[in-house]
Amino acid sequence: MNDETRELVRQWKEKAQNDWTAVGILLASEQCPAETVCFHCQQFVEKLLKAFLTQYDIESPKTHDLRRLIQLAESYVPELSRLSDESDKLTVHGVETIPW
Image (tube, rainbow, N blue to C red; front, side, top):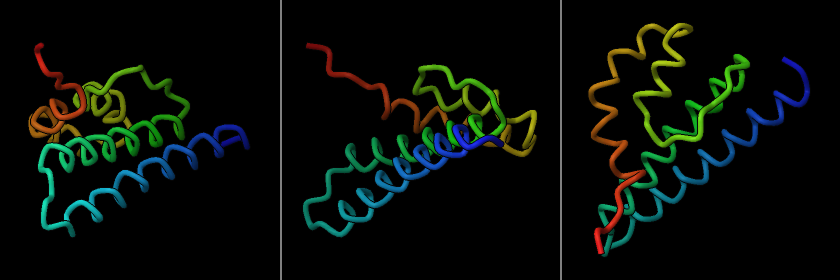
């Protein structure tokens, strides 16, 4: 892995860690907004998957679809395919909008 790729992977992991830290802070609150926790959990997983894809020189599409990211990564880690169905439940929290 070259230095540029290594730096991109580091950045993805750092951003993922920030989301995970936010989850911890929110869960410690007495007024924890569940939707916001789910959003940051989705973001955490998405960013870790994008870090993984970057590490293997696979271009990450601009998507919040965890299933799609898992499909791209599973050629390197076939066990990830077991998470595809469950990932759909988390994906909606990364893309859900309010119909105004």
